[in-house]
Length: 564
Ligand code: XMP
Image (cartoon, rainbow, N blue to C red; front, side):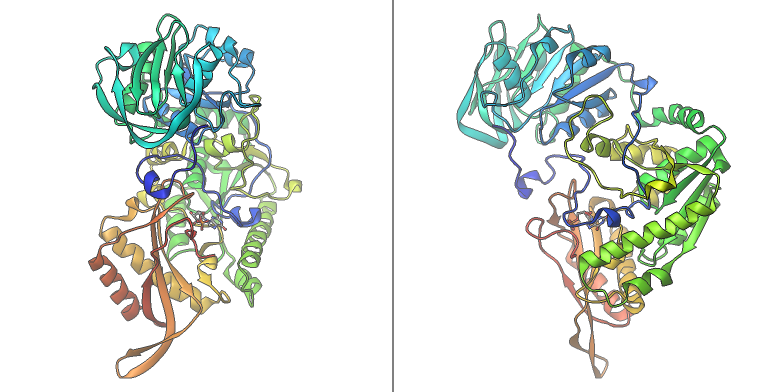
């Protein structure tokens, strides 16, 4: 048994998994608005890029960090893709990978129904690195002994390298730290293997059979708390598998541009834009490929942050010269939100109305037959892969569905990229930092930050102003990129205050600032007192209708990041 969920304090700074935020309770329709993109159910398979001639396939045994392994390999300049462990061996062989990596996973190799490792994979003549469950599965398949450890090892663990460390660990310090997350251990390496290291709970914490090109480690090299993790991955990729540094996210730009041109021909293309980095990057790529054949649609539902719509219009229309339809739908949304206080009802209304407006605009562009989507590789993986025999890991709803009768073909130029790679592409394409590094913003926008009451124009204006002050001060303090999200919440209650010579009866503003790696867990950010003081003074003095500022110091779990 391996990899239970880590407590947030263990996780802080330790791992950087790239899973998309999963939003319990967020309706599909509401989430469609996050990136301003209507969506589609099925997406076409995408060929690996030319620049990925040397690819590494990571076989996913259900590990919490499987995506992270692929990301780390790509950070080493080698293209990696994640496939389910059950992918047929002939399909894997047909991809001619340079190396295979077997991920961790939650099962015990000896449990009934545990994901088994087809031994033919180990006979392909391709170097294999098993990590955690991946090593246990390999050891089990080849006659080693895997059993429950006396005590599991979770978190930072001392590793002792044996002998000269062999090919995989040779030259690294004899005593080092690593990050473990397992209950089972390899007690005896398979015949023909050399044990390379041990830890208090893992008699064989690393092993190899150089002759057969098989390597295993019990710890997680992909996690930043394994200080030599990257070095070990590099050793495997370069010295053992002979991979060169060929992959960079920017290197896909030219290739994607060619592909988009080939796909679209001279047809018209439409793209919903919110200013979020994914849809913005997808739009910028498509624009580079087909120029004026692309029309972007920005639906301003009145729930955006201060100057957000203007910034997007400026960046796209003025700076990049993209054809952009700016739909001011604020009145429409406010009218539909009148009297609604229930969070899910709000989300639903905002999501539905968004789709309606987008649909109307799309129909005006009669000749548009393609729709751009900012689907990322994490979405692809989580929705079951690209038709490589992938089992559905979980179905992904970061983008909700436009009605099928709109009948668009999809253009999804980011399907191969992780979020941080998208940021690199965005920068390369010349998108402004404000868009490239924008903190995530929920689709229903400020609508779900006015809590316990109706969303009205007055409350939105108060919240928008307070939020702008917070953002300004956080940027000025140089903290914006360090925070996963920072924002204000307006609870619909009034409290007494005293300003000038009179009593006031006004709203409080709650400051919410969190650090997180993936939004699944989050910790409240320890903002400096002087910054908090400035923000509090400015909000109370500059925003009419507010007489109190509070700070949310709850982590997730048990709280969530947003208040609704
Ligand atoms: P919670 O509040 O669940 O949020 O901790 C996790 C992440 O998801 C974002 N979020 C949403 N995104 N529609 C969205 O598109 C929603 O309804 C929604 N609710 C939360 C939130 O901002 C955070 O990044």
